[in-house]
Length: 271
Image (cartoon, rainbow, N blue to C red; front, side, top):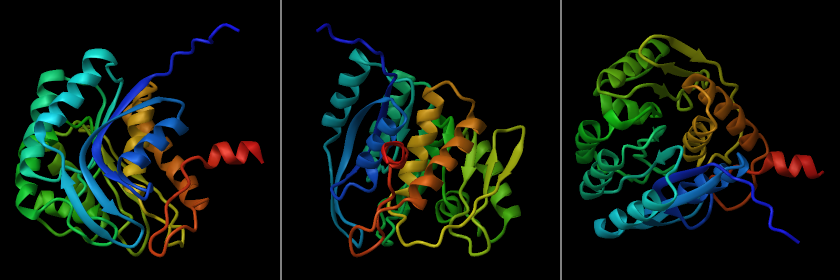
């Protein structure tokens, strides 16, 4: 038997871990796998969490972060990079320096500030540093409404305010911005702005508690689509479709907000 050589496109997540498997790096790697990509990871923080609560978070020393990133880029340069939870000012500075150094393409940044349980994953005093250091590297920035409010400094209570936030974040340096509307009560429409065109992306709301890790999954699905050569708006549209299915087929695991089903297409194909 000869080995079959198939070249999977490499893609990287730089984020915190979730030992319960529904969010963070674990969700990112599952999402990459579901898109037939070769997923790699740089662990920034080890988070002890489950569907109901965050117990603690331990930040990896920046020297180890630098070396993980170097190990990946010197050997298997990724076609896209998803950046998630940045747990400290030191980590924000460290990741920004590495993005400057390695200049990766197709960078999707999810400004993770709160866990589903409300636990603050990015202390408020780090928001300004994040805005100053990180936003300019984003090919796509994916804040939800509370995160966009923290980054823009004004309340977002309707679609017009979401559009304004997208424009402000674009002015701060993001090439394109997806303001996610999942926190609104009326509909879950998202707003996408690329500096030229403002698009409102309609979203049907699914009544379920099982939404643990949806933000991580969406941003990594966008990165996956960019790695596959799709334009930003198309990448966002297809990522939303994928996450909708993952929530629709979500898993009743845990006592809190259950995880989504990253491999629902694989399981559907088998049944």
